[in-house]
Length: 125
Image 1 (cartoon, rainbow, N blue to C red):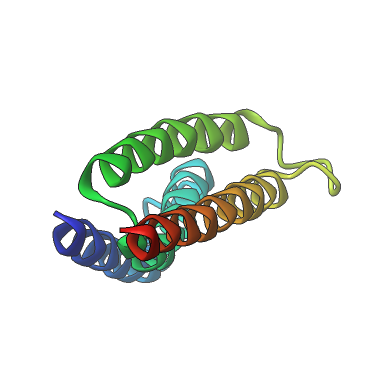
Image 2: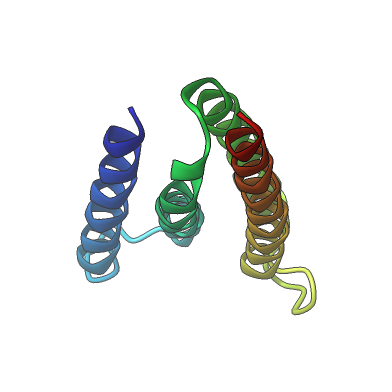
């Protein structure tokens, strides 16, 4: 399951990247759609990188982490999409990247704590 999620997020991010490249040159360009998929692209790259670090988790904790990640991603993308892009300090890109940075930091701290917790329990056995 861990490998499937990692590869799926990598494939999704590549597909979104290629789609954004060609969509930017199309006649039907809509910047709202481009922003939405750009936020999804950022999250798919983040999920790919975090899923590599998540190999330290057992399967149950990995599934819980992944479900929480998907929920947080949906909330973050919808919140970033709803923000008006006219304000420089609170544009959707900055808000989305702040959410990604915050969630990544919390996730990496969680992965490190679980790694040392598993290592300590393995050493005591």
